[in-house]
Amino acid sequence: MSTRILIADDQDDVRIGFRLILDSQPDMTVVGEAADGERAVELARHVKPDVVLADIRMPGLDGLEVTRQLAGETRVIVVTTFDLDDYVHTALRNGAAGFLLKRSGPTLLIEAIRAAMAGDTLISPQVTVRLLQHLRSPAPDVTPSHEALTDREREIAVLVAHGRTNADIAGALFISPGTVKTHLANIQRKVGAANRVGIAAWAWSSGAAS
Image: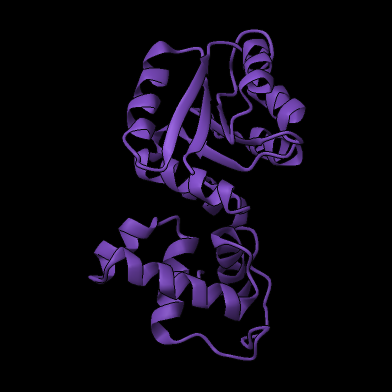
């Protein structure tokens, strides 16, 4: 089944760009576009998309209010130019299934949609690093599963904590993206993390990323 996506952004070129990226994916289809928040909510309730991509600064309702109104009905990923901490916290508090910066690129956009469909939450690495750098209190080196990370797993966890994407990690370590995903799954299990944000939080709080 194809993931049905609604794009809400007041800039025509952004909507066109997102549509080109997403419609090129075999498992994704753009089912609607909205140039303001009120239209986004109305259209979402009519076409019932699986995922809504919502810009923060739109005429009428902003993306944060759109998220609040729709979060109980569909998955909303906030995609914005602005990475202010207040925006991130409000979006997540309002039920956002992801928070991406527009400069993050098409690969992360696609990953975020697939993560949302899997019940996960993806946040732009740049934002994750800033939010988690204060988590520097000592933590036990023993993981919840009582399995220590391998040297390679620890290396990947640190790269995640510093905001590197799967593609970045694969290139830096000369391994395939599929191998990176396998390592990430093992790290999540060992440290008890629900997603890559949890891995980053573990790396900062344990001192591994310092």
